[in-house]
Image 1 (cartoon, one colour):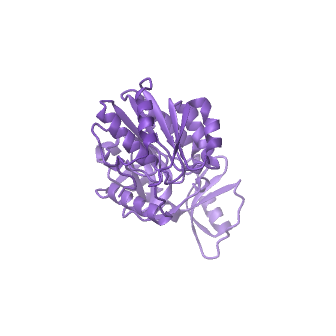
Image 2: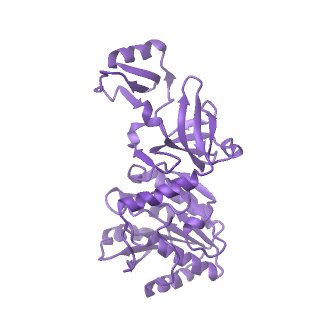
Image 3: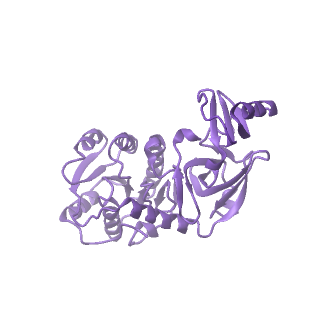
Length: 355
């Protein structure tokens, strides 16, 4: 299921943009910016197909983590289409950068770093790099777009807008690339939150359709993206003391700058505690958490769903479509911030500071 498919039924200014891109010095990076449902991916598909027909080598960087075309969701991905395509959902990824959530407001740095790294990789073998972005264009999204543009330095930044609502964003991005503003097509359709969730559900389901469970040795594949596992393990006496004080079942714990514990609530447990002293993670929040298998270059080999952690043996059970030889390449198991089932059902988002 994809919201955007190839069409020639586009406003005339799209053909003018195409001509402008073809005249850019190569390799050229082109960043597309617009609010949700403004037609960014439709425009990208139109441009990519025509550029390929003209004999140019094209790369697609898909950083719309919430409505990813190139699987899996919650990552930034790059693909090198060799022939025209109907939808970017048809494209096979060449590389990924793990974000770990579909709402990247707290992951501005990771989003900018991921787009920068993949855009640079793309420019090494493509004439034109087309960069699709999220519809996050207000609040923290403005800072995210600024960081991306500052790092990537695109030759052209294309804004899709209706009534000049992105004029401020255009102004602050103008030092980092030439800008052009296009009107949103009258054919662009707004999708409800439920429709977008259903698109993601199908993407998750497709990605995990051939998944199997693997065991990950956390003493060799280092868990990252979380405060868990840092510092020295708590002693039995410390765990018993915390359990007695707060009426928790303390499953695991560590001491670095503060106490970090994985706990289960006991009846009558105390919920109020000093978070500067103790960081407590509910054990159930780790169940079905999205994780990324990260290689030695910091790129994401693929994602999985965390099913179980044996803290005593430092072993994790993860459901993933990655074959064993790819899992073995991972040097990190990076924790994300969305809980999802392999059926595609999203169980909820976690705040960055929760883990």
